[in-house]
Image (cartoon, rainbow, N blue to C red; front, top):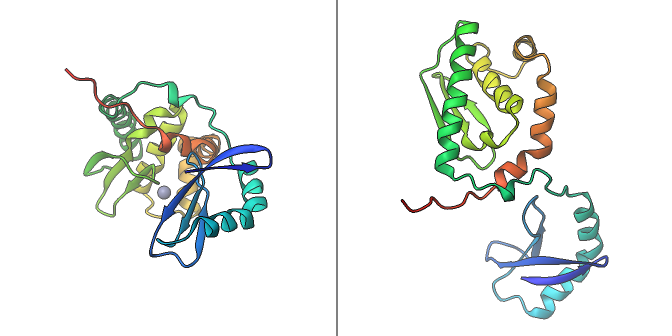
Amino acid sequence: MRLVDVGGRLVELHIRRSKRVHGHRLYIRQGLPPELVVRPRASDTYIDDAIAMHLSWLERQLASVAEPCLGLERLRLTEQQGRREAQARISLIAQSEAAALGVSYTRLTLRDQRSRWGSCSSKGALSFNWRLVLAPHDVLDYVVVHEVCHLAEHHHGPDFWRLVERRRFAYRDSKNWLDAHGWEMLAYRPPLEAAA
Ligand SMILES: [Zn+2]
């Protein structure tokens, strides 16, 4: 870790060494410190030069990265509690939505995917990210309805989106919320289970 002055703001830069990088690479991911990847034996001078070379780029990138605003870091929800809650709410919506559309699914599972909110297999198995429980209800509801609609339309064509809109006319708001804040839910680190 290095503290770097980026346009007057002290930023922690994580240094990682890897054989798989040529020269160096700089990564910026939301919710994580920026990371500089260098060759295993890169010298301190090399690292300083690499940082200096990218300083203005780093400053522009950091200015455009959103700050967390949901306050999830104050939550004390464990993964076990979250999964239980998510399972109850998601199955309820999936059941009533499937009944309304006249479709059925083979099973419903919860996962801890790094980048997906839900999926629907060609065999009709639904899976959802338990972290949806951290979202406002309409967002969780939209993701479940989206996947249940895939049981009728297995694609993202116009027919699919018409069906989603018929079931949830304001779905775009939920979708936009997810695009803007989904990363905060993925970055949530639940506390370890309390000892019994
Ligand atoms: Zn989809």
